[in-house]
Image (spheres, rainbow, N blue to C red):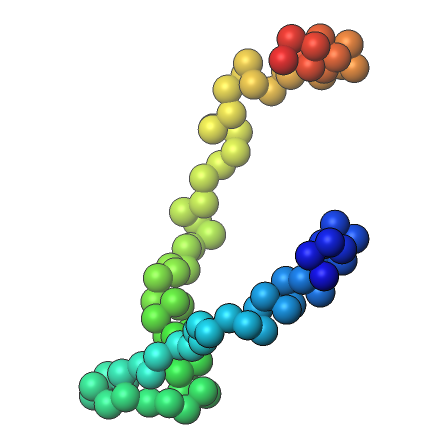
Length: 91
């Protein structure tokens, strides 16, 4: 198997994983009352609540206007094949 690793990497790493003794699991989560839960659905809902609390909903009236952010110098960019070749040759 080791001699054939260049052609069949998948089998080699599958064998190595099968011999591994580590087992990674999500530990039990505590709810708002401090009680541990092992129910998958309840854990998923708790994780969803935590992750969704990080995001905020922005009002459309507070969105930045692109015209105010762009500098006139950045709008007039010219890219040609020759300019790209020149930059790549300098690398």
